[in-house]
Length: 151
Image (cartoon, rainbow, N blue to C red; front, side):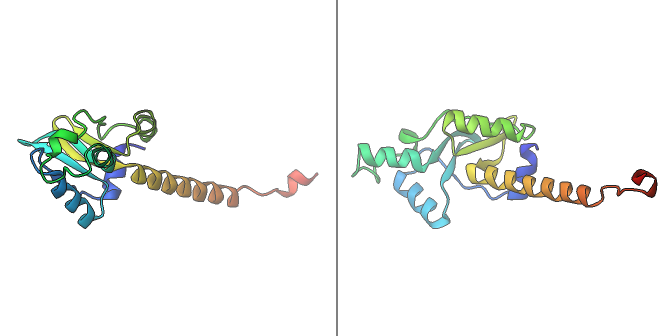
């Protein structure tokens, strides 16, 4: 399964912010939208990712500095990314290897979307259900014994 298929099923809603927005604004957006990440864009280019991981680290290090801290100071400025043609197995491996819960999908310089750990789990579950259904249909249609086979 290619990541382009996962994106197609997921849909194309994408939430972004700029690196110069405050962390407080990012938290408000993430809370209001019930999302775990923001894609950080500057001049039409992906410049980073902000997830709850970076926010929690910032809260631990500077609990009172939200209004005056910009996203740029805490974002992941080198997120692992994949292309739409990347196989799902490879994305799962990268997510585990890099402890990444959110991975941008890039088609060259163009951001196509973000795949989350949840999206991958859902896609794998749907693929397993489909495979299970096909196997059951195959077994159900298994050729039966003929009279000649009984002798």
